[in-house]
Image 1 (spheres, rainbow, N blue to C red):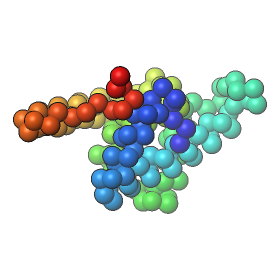
Image 2: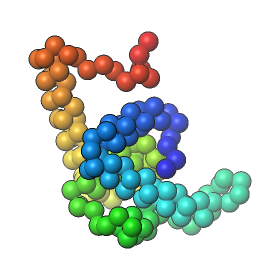
Image 3: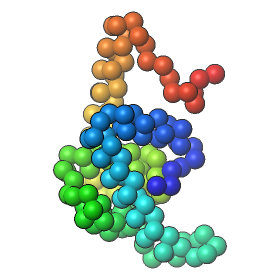
Image 4: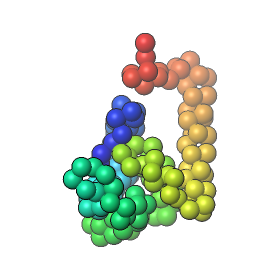
Length: 144
């Protein structure tokens, strides 16, 4: 999966947290990476050698078509994971920003719900850490 350079350190930390979180986290990362790698190949087929888009296929269309591969190799994904997956894909994938701009209103609501859930989860973790006197440290790429 090609990751945007501006978020590569953050994605690296998130990915490591998933991989250290057990089988479910490992499966989550494996699915996202395979899905995006196949979508990238489809997307690049619509590029000219000089890097300009041929205008044949959008990032969204490529991601939708690419879903067949991880579903075929890894099994169908529970729909409750699609929002969080899209959230991470939009954030980290090289074509994620374009994808986010191409989502339908329903898809955007699914991603917005995932963002709200993640925000609530992070706030709960921070509150628990503060109560325990263990304030979470910022990611290493933001420390001075």
